[in-house]
Image 1 (cartoon, rainbow, N blue to C red):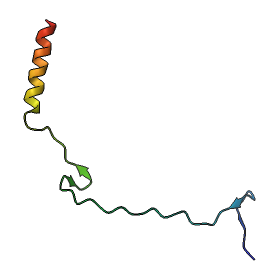
Image 2: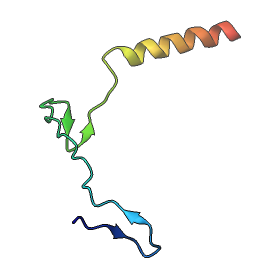
Image 3: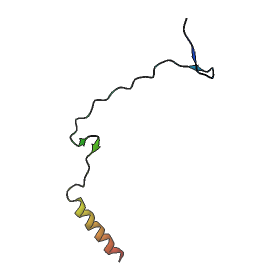
Image 4: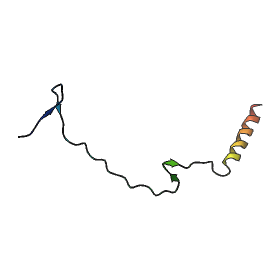
Length: 61
């Protein structure tokens, strides 16, 4: 004889456990530290951006 559970309003309540999520294997990537991703500007990108900006600003004048 199965038991049926209801909440205080008399509505049926499910007693089935929610499905468990599968745990993913943790990545052993060295670019991560304490949950923060290491980001930065690649070498030469800053100079290239400055040159592009100067070139575009000279065209506007």
